Length: 68
Image (cartoon, one colour):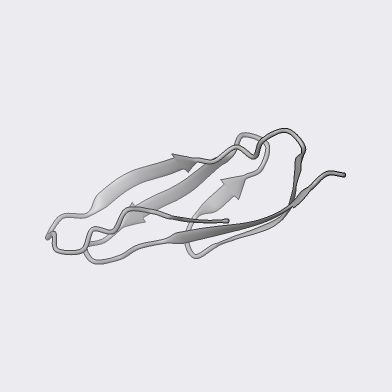
């Protein structure tokens, strides 16, 4: 699963304090995550992206496994 922070493309403004939430459902185990910017807390499901300058974006990829 991948998640992308909103792009500020086409804008001369920056975005600050960006966070996104993606809690994995019951029965799905977090294996690893990788963010191009910021950090993801698997316990709360909050991705703290931080700030994006105009034209920038950020991506969070979460690898998970369905419990059997």
